[in-house]
Image 1 (tube, rainbow over the protein chains, first blue to last red):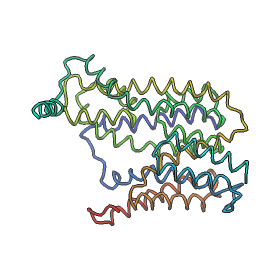
Image 2 (tube, rainbow over the protein chains, first blue to last red):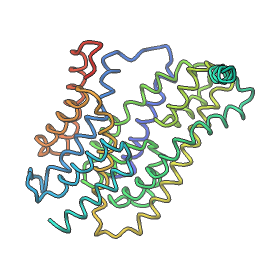
Image 3 (cartoon, chains in turn red, green):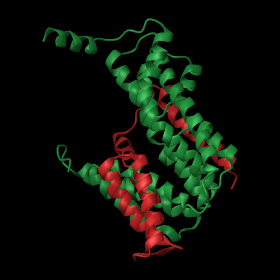
Image 4 (cartoon, rainbow over the protein chains, first blue to last red):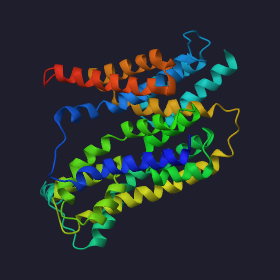
Length: 104
Length: 249
């Protein structure tokens, strides 16, 4: 995989999406269903990344207390819910992981 | 009492910017509160991209080539997981789809501009530049210099993003490898996703995508991620279509 090609294509696609309607104004409209669907991109994509990071160890489901990342992740979810603050969530989650690795 | 009323009226009145400089700086000023949140975010990105295995140059250049925060974090994660290039590009596309909404929303206000202006402003169109700009445009309508407002907001954000990335890369080299810094990436995603889980369709979307991602994890090329994202988006959209217009939760 060439990271530069990935960035070039990723950047080009991102630009074209930003440019699309500004450039083609008045020539077509976003269908209502697509507009709705776009709202679910963040929860769907991010959760699809988060779940394997928390639940899987060496490609296997790990639901024991030995899975420190899962426990620290749960602490982070609660922190995010209470504070709605990115930095605090990261710091508390990292601290939780460090403590779990030390003591469990 | 009278003072208060005058104050309110001033705030509601249309603000006419007399020249491009005034409009530009109004955009920069409107962006400043957002920059306070963007700076640490850019630093975290820089440090994590480096930690995920990207070179210093690639980590820095992604901030100007892609210039879209969450997709840059996702790219770092996928590079760390050694996902193939086409999956990463596809994921960047899905994560950045929302920019089409911003483009559609701002299009009527930018319709009269030349193609170079449209190109420049499209490149600068991020979540954080869109937010203050649409508020300003909806309040004041199209004015001769109103595109300079978006230019000011966008450029302020762009410069901050580049500098904060560089600071993050610089600090990232000083962080020992024994710290499980890679875990900060999923934590960042948790911090992003939890606040958007405001109703049942969103929660169902997140849970279904997550579960499918676990089940489909063995698919080659990390295609499980794409499958999971599509299922999650479909579940959320379907549930929202089913519920009554007034029912939120």
